[in-house]
Every structure is written in structure tokens, then in C-alpha cells.
Image (cartoon, rainbow, N blue to C red; front, side, top):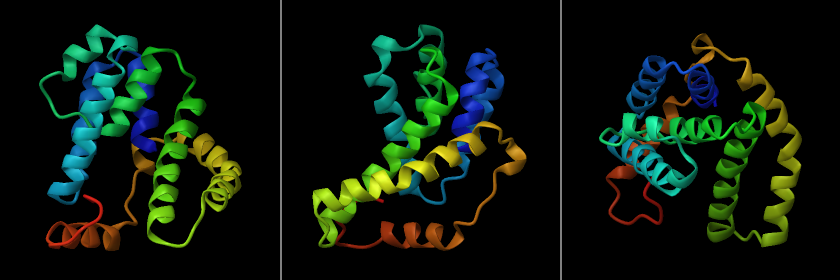
Length: 164
């Protein structure tokens, strides 16, 4: 969220140097190969899918480089003048919707319950979007060490349902 927020601001301020640095940081924060592939492949796919609405200047900057997913989403949104809070809320909602979709496949959770979970999360996502909109790089931290270790261990499992 912090990287998406800062990327949106970098695009609106036409600070391509900082945008590139944010992308490098986003990629460097990936703890393992699968997470790196996940964010870079999703970023590339998002950029390609959004190309009709994107900026040629922005697209050319990243055409030959790995592009982290949150950077791609924020940059395309900013290019199209989607407000920052709306961008962050949509980005978070998408992430949560993907997790709910996973839960519906792996545990006994129906679609109605899944939609209720998303509805219950909306006030929290709105608040998190407001906080992320004012965040700086100093607010970027990591409380995901255990999750990072699990992601790396997951890369070496023989049977997996999901890539990461």
C-alpha cells in the first residue's frame, strides 16, 4: 500500500526517477523467486492489459524492465487521474477478493459468506487507504518475516495448488 501510494504520487508529480526507485525497492522486497515472479508477472500483465488507457511515456519506461504489480496499478491509475484514495481502496479490495476466492476453494465457504467477508472489510479498507495515502517510505516496514519464510518454503513443495 505504501509503495502504491508513493508511486501514484511520483507519477502525478512526473518524478520518473523516484518511480523507478520505488519499483526497484518493490522488487527487492520480494523474499524469494516465486514472490518476485508473482509481482513482476502481474505488473507486466496489468501494464499490457491497461495499455489502451496508459501513458506511452510511462509504458516506454518499463517495457524492458520488471515492473512490480503495485507500481503498475498505481501508475496506470494516476495516469488516468483516478483519485489516490480510490486507487488504494480498489487495490486492497482486489487483494482481499483474491484471498476470499482462495478461501472459497480451500475451505467450506460459500459465495454468500465470501461476499459478506468483503462487505465487512470495507470500513477497514477505507481507513487503511486513508492512512496509506499519507504514508512515506519511513512508514514502510516489515512484519512479514514468518510469511516470507513460508513463501520460500512453499516454492520447494512438490504439490501446490497456488504458485505463491
